[in-house]
Length: 251
View 1 (spheres, rainbow, N blue to C red):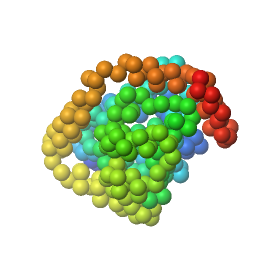
View 2: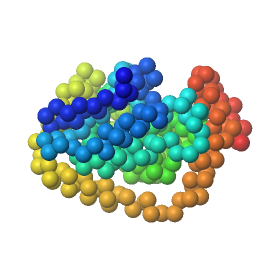
View 3: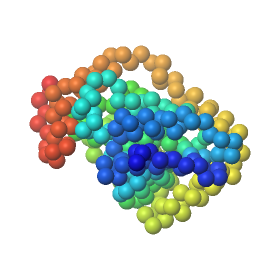
View 4: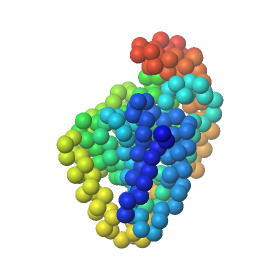
C-alpha cells in the first residue's frame, strides 16, 4: 500500500497521507511520493487540490525512527513543501487531527486550511533537540510574524486550532462534525472561480513572498545542522520515541 494516495474527481485532486499506523509521519519515501504528486501538472479540468490524512492524526511530522537512521543532510521536506507551494492551483488542507512539526509546515504550505476545533498545531522541534531549516522558519514568519513564531518555536507546545485561527494562521475553523461540510463549501467556491485568475493570484503571492530566500543564511544552516547531528538531537529523538523526558546537555 502506498503511503500517499491520490485521485482526481472532476475539478478536485485529492491527496491522502496514508500511514495512519505511524500517525502519517513523513519518512523519505512518503515525502518523495508527495513531491511527485505536486510535480505532476494538473489536467485542464482540475481547479483545486486537497490534502488530508488517514486515521485520527493529520500528520505528526518527520518519522523520527527514519530520521535517526538518516541524520546527515537534508530530509527532503523542503523540496516536498516547495512543490506544494508552487503548485499552480490552490491547495486546501483539511486538518481533522493534530498537525505537528513537519505536519504543521505541511498544513501552512497549503493555500487555505480548514481545521477541526479538535485539531492542534505546533512545532515541537526544541523539545527533541532539533531546529527548523531556513525554509521552514521562513513560512512561519510569513504567516505568523516574529512574536508568534518565537512562541511556537521556542516553547514547542501544540496550540489548539482555535488559537491558530484567531491568530490568522489558518483560514477556516469548524466543529468536528461540520468539518467536511465546511471544507466542501471552500473547495466548491475555489472550483467555481476563474482558473486563470486563481493561477495568476497564487503565482503572484508566492513570488512576492520569496524574497527572503535571497538573504544570506549559510551560518544559520550550520547552526541547524549542528543541532540535528548533536548528541542532544539524538537524545531528544530517542526520548520522544521512548516516551520519556530527554536529558539535554547542550552538546
